[in-house]
Length: 67
Image (cartoon, rainbow, N blue to C red; front, side, top):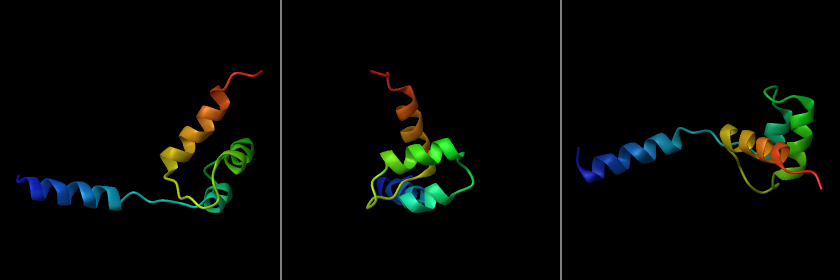
């Protein structure tokens, strides 16, 4: 596979990943109420996120040490 074909394949794979707004993630049935509260606090209104990024944001918040 040539370098150009590899680049096209990677671009297609990245384009296939869905991105969602903060409001869409909060409305999703995939997250429980507590996680939705965390998403509401941690995510930016003007940015889109993949489901993996949203899950990582929730987990990072939960892993923070309480002061």
